[in-house]
Length: 496
Image (cartoon, rainbow, N blue to C red; front, side, top):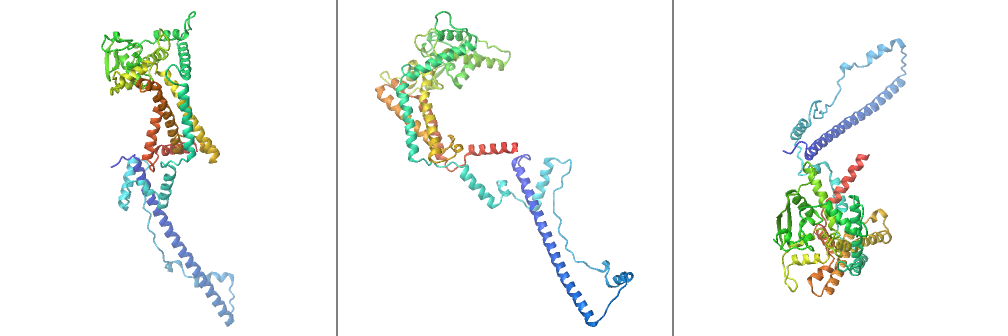
């Protein structure tokens, strides 16, 4: 038996109420029938009475009989001519009583449900597998099904040739920006721009934490990095293989990617907190995780929550100290990896290049040559341009070509045509990027990855998965759209 406070039980109650309402309406119909019959009988009696009176008056006139009745004798005539009520036999019809469910003042919901079940059992009320179907008429069901099909079903894409042309053009523009302004780490104009932005952000973050600026003619970025390094120390900041007793090979150029705590994502946060609590450090080498014991590390705080917060602040502050390189680095220095880039070290397969290196080692060497978070920011710019340009062009086409209202031109990713256009646009960007990387790399895997836009491929991959899921689910219910509609209706009812 289902829970008594479940939604199906409430639907069961509504079904019983519907049965009672139908009984009351039937009773009202019978009453209307009886009243109509009585009205017809009274009308017929009135007609007969009028005819009798006319006949009596006609007979009296023909017989020339004249009645003169004094006022004080009228009561005697009434008593002689009218029949008493006790002698009248009135026909009547007994209507059946309407059954109902009595509700006591002290009754609870469970008791009421028991009475409802007893009523349903008495009258043989059986609900369908979905009890709410019994609450709707056939016409209501058809109307609901048609509305769901038209408004809340995942539809097939209906892009025209102009949509594909616009999307491909937007992707081509993004691809050209990627080829001419991003290039390899440290050389493209956008990479130099993001390097400068990163230096500025590091300095501002250091000032928020008490840095008073560089002393003398010292480099402000190096001074800010040194300040953050001193104030956000962690126990897993090993610089080279000697710091881990030569267990595996590591250098100052790749220790940020080999150590999982330096990854600016959920993986890095997890291992950073874990290492700070347990005085350990976790590294990746040859596709395997290596755990290293460190000196005892004590987090500030009096309980688990405060220590966890302290560990999070340490992780964040230490990432800011490393994102622009170390304080003693020459040139760009070794930054932190792109989010989730460290996980590529687990793909320890394949043989690439002259030295037959695995893909994991190739990924590490690519990072060593500057393929870090700052370069990732530069690679995100053509991706962002492609995304925004496609959405703006789609909205403009909807407004001026299809003549829709501005409300209907909001570039929501739930629109199937816009979703397809974004897929084509980012696919065009990736095609240009891959062609450029292939031609300029000369078959060198490291150079190919250095010139490839990983951010663009990640965005294209997510769009491809969405499009594949939409193609497979075409015609099915769009649960997100239904949830959004129900939330909007719920808020509207609360505001009413």
